[in-house]
Image (cartoon, rainbow, N blue to C red):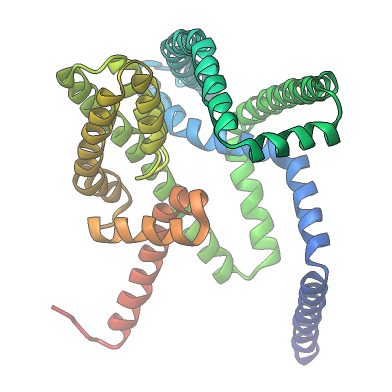
Length: 377
């Protein structure tokens, strides 16, 4: 018995020493460590993305499965799961296609309008530059020197064209790589959804084989809590996006802004980034409206901000905060702190992470008070 205890103690010390050595190496070779992490992430990126897609789609799959089980009398598990996954993917794809068909034609029309105005803008800019050079000959001399040092005009134009062609080729290459990564991620997500019970059971086996039962039970409990919290967060976030999109559509229609439906849908999509995401839609909307009428663009920003502030401070904390079990005060605090510490990832994950921590701390505090036989009214 003593020998077994000594072996366990020795193993603990060996693990601590290895962690200390690795930490020391990581601090002294931080750039190399980041390079290794970055390489590993690039290799695993399609599978990480697949896991995220599977987690989001799993919310739909569970709801569809629950509904189908009421109607399929034989309750053939594989058939129900297959139908649920296919329907979830179809809904996911239809939302993307609907959004693309709604947004892309409007964006193309506005880009064409902008391109039509480009010659006039270039002419105005040219006249302004010529007037400036006439007033300030010193600037004209400096520009002449710059051209003399850089080479003739044809060489400069050739270099600029080469730069744009190289950039275009790089963009096409990255677009193809992204498409392959997304396709791989979707296939991986389908496999994960089809075999999720097997994956959960396998993960539990690894945990219970490596840790003692008490710690493994605690990790399983935390994992279950995190899964429920993040699922509720995503559902609440989607509901909040629909509410915000509806409010924006009503406000834009009443105010007589162009592209009311397109901008409302764009606002709903970008608002999936909590609190601050909808500002992206505001900037795009202001640019599109500002091309035709700058004054109307300013009014658009004011209307947008009013609706956004009402929704962000009163509706969002109650809809999303309530879905994860946090009060409006703690919801705003979690998002603000997460955003300040970690930027966009902190904004996205701050609320569900805070909810999990809140539940764990609440359980710990209540357990300690119960052990001490103290009741707080």
